[in-house]
Length: 59
Image (cartoon, rainbow, N blue to C red; front, top):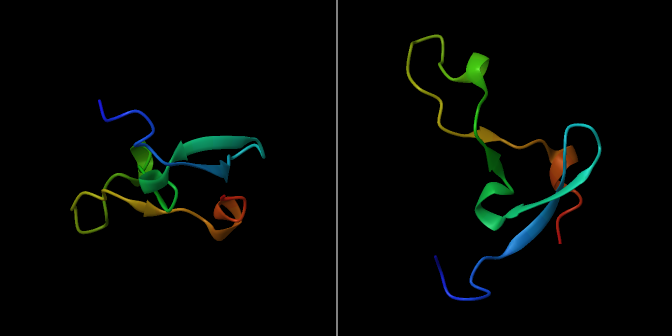
């Protein structure tokens, strides 16, 4: 655990339109789901760029 107030929270728009708070590191990228975990070449995908529509709400 970090110091009190060390985590910076930002708001993003979720899939169903709801506003969610996530850490600043997760605001631009998200983890892929089960069907998006591997590329065609077979390598792992670690981050997916979050859509511009979701990141418009950030504060």
